[in-house]
Length: 241
Image (tube, rainbow, N blue to C red; front, side, top):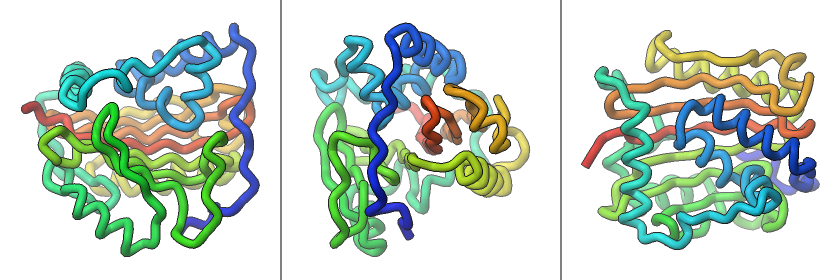
């Protein structure tokens, strides 16, 4: 159930250019690799940061095959030698589920979704059928993106929840990370502090839990972006071709 649909949309944060540069540098440090920072920069909060820095999305100009090659090079820098004991991805099976499986899942939950073809085939869900459509110029309060390889396999699932309070962000981080730890075990890498006081304490205050395996990457991030709290989940196949 998506309780936040229909709420008043909060405009993207407005930061000075120097703070934007520092924000992107912080993201890069937290992510530790291309996947994390680039993934965030292409979320509804990250895209305004790119525009204000004078950056564009070069991936929109490349083919799905080329985009997948870039993704594979990025995940190769993160994968380890140990296979994952499981690969949770919001009820989907990475490298197995197809667009038809995802559509059946989203239809059963009444999600309003749209398909995209660049830089790769994706299904983006940002609301509930019958509810007012989210403002395309502002960050949705809830969004899921399912991304597919050129051969049709589901290779990543991203869920973004924004316009959260610090308490809600901390609670959701604890809930999601707890579920992930219960499935994968205690081997995740934790960075930052997920308490409400810390997350509310300043822009770019972040908590992140990351699991890395030979065939799977999972990252849960709670972040304060100029006073606005977001929770980003990413579940991604790390298998090569």
